Amino acid sequence: MQRSPLAALLLPVLLAVPSVASADTLSCDDEAVEAKRSGTLVSTDGGRIDYEVCTATADSGRLEGALWASLREGKQRQLVQSIADGPADDWRLELGGGVFLLDFPCSAETGPGEARCVRSWEVRGEDFAEETAQVRTPWEVGAQRIELMLADGRVEAARGVAMRLGPPPRHITNGEERVFFAFLQNAWFRAGRLRESGDLRGATEAMMAFFAQPPVLASSSQMFLDKITLRPGYGAYSIPGQIQVRANEALVARLVDGASILSAGGERRRASEILTEVVRVVPNNADAWLVLGDVHWNQRLKHQAMEAYKKYLELAGIGDDEIPPRVVERLAP
Image: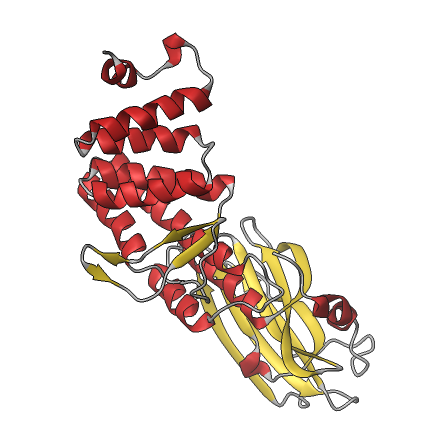
């Protein structure tokens, strides 16, 4: 994702030492503190963070804020002390996938409320590590929060954030793809685990639910020929809107795998729709042609299956001994 032009302007603000603090440390028990809150975040991988956030008015008239936290009931330490533009209630925290995320409001010459100062730490070990500091738009922070929620298995919470997020700012050219792929990846992982455990029905339902009611739709009804376009809904019941995403190697691989699961579970029409759209935009993807051939064969569309298999062989560049036996058998005169 491209960094906002605002980032270059605000990054010094994020990293600067507050003038009111000098060498002092802001404790949340200080008399100057005007707002504070505390709580606990627990992740599915066993991570636990107890935290306290507080803010006070700085000499400049803006706010000075601090974050104190302890990991797995260890010793509490200060992770952040910075100038901010919002009280403790506006400081947001998230934990998921081994990452602890903090964002709080920043301001620039163009006015407040246009950016969030972001700090994140790795928390897989015994302590907070590998801090990063960035400045992002509220939309970018929302997308990152979705990814952490999905990594923690909180799919419905992530859906709620995605549905409130709205379209990305114009300068973020791959925003919808980022959110779409995060949910696709999550559905693919869940479906894969179910299929491996022998629950093909559950795997099919997991993929079908994702394609039937995705959490993000294209912000424009304009059709882009270079984007994969999918219609949400189930059977005859369509949902207004469309999914339009730019193809990349990882996204195409997940779509092809997802279509394969749908076909194996009996949802061949949906699988065919997905694969037909994939090969339209990415006509040189051999795996997509192979799975599309299998889907057409199971639909008893033998002519279409033959054409797809021939396209697969043309693109795969493999020897006779590497051709899947089913393809050899089906192409035999």
